[in-house]
Amino acid sequence: PGWAAEHRHAVRSLVTEHGALLIRGLALKEAGQAGAVLHHLAPGPMTEREAFAPRRTRAPGVYSSTTWPANQPMCMHHELSYTHAPPGLLLLACLTAPRTGGATALADATAVLDALPPELVQRFEEEGWLLTRTYHDEIGASWAQAFGTDDRTAVEDYCRAHRIEFRWLPDGGLHTRQRRRAVLRHPVSGRRCWFNQIAFLNEWTMAPEVREYLIDVHGPDRLPFTTRFGKGDPIGEDVVQLINTVYERHTVREPWQDGDLMLVDNIRMAHSREPFEPPRDVVLAMAEPLHPTPCPPTFEENAR
Image 1 (tube, rainbow, N blue to C red):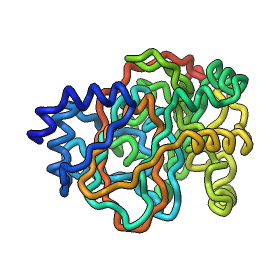
Image 2: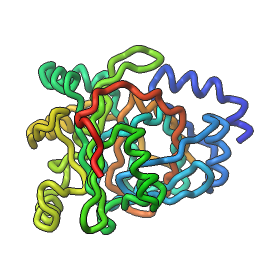
Image 3: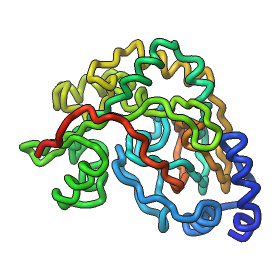
C-alpha cells in the first residue's frame, strides 16, 4: 500500500498513456492487502450492479473473478458496458496464478473500431445495441444477486432510474431490455472507441450445445442474455464471428504471475479471460464511473 500511495500519479499517468499497465513484483498474496493497494490507486471503488454471473465480495470494494467454467473462454468485452454509468478503470490483482492459461488478454478499442467494416460500425453507432436478459435462479446471477436486493420495488426503481425496461414473469423471474451506445469517445483523449458487449453477451458466442439446451428449456425469447441491434433486429452469427475475429487480431496477452497487479482503462481496452487449469485467484475492483451518456430509450415506458 505504501508503494501504491507513493507512485499513484506515475501509475495513473502510464495507464492514461498506454491504456493498461502490468506491475510485477508487489507480491500481493491476499485480498485485503490487494484491496489496500487498489484503494490507494483509485479511491472510492464502485459497487457492482447488474452482474451477468455471480461474484463474491473478497474485501471492501474487492470482488472475486466472475464465476465461469475454467475450460470456457470469456470473450473480449468492456466491463459493465451495458450499465448506465460503467466503470472507467479496472484494477486486477493476481493472488494465485493458474498452472496454464488464464491470461486476462487485452485489445485496443480504437484499433478494433478502425478494423471493423464501416457500414457495421455506422449501423451500431446510429442504433446502439440492445441487451435482453432473463434472470433465472439456476443460470447466472439471479435478479436479487444482480441488483443487490430481493425487494422488487427497489429493483423497479433502479430499472426506471437506469433506463431499463422490465417485466416480472409468472415464475418469479425478471425479464429486462436496455439500449446502450456501441461507440464512445474517450473522456480524456477524445478517441472513438468500440465500447460494448455485443459479441460477448450474444447467443452465438455460446457453445452450440449450451445454446441449443437453453433454447430447448427456456425458448429463444427467454435466454439468460443475448444482444440485438438497437432497433431490435437479430444479430447474425456471422456478425458475432466477425467481431470476435477482429478482437483476436488485436489481442495482446501476458500470462499472470503470482502477485501481479494490472490496471486497465475500461474504455480504451477490452479484456477477456482465457481458459485455464485451476487454481486461479484474480480479484477485481472497479472505479471512476462514467457520466451517463444519452441514448434514446428503445421503449417508451417500463411495464410491471
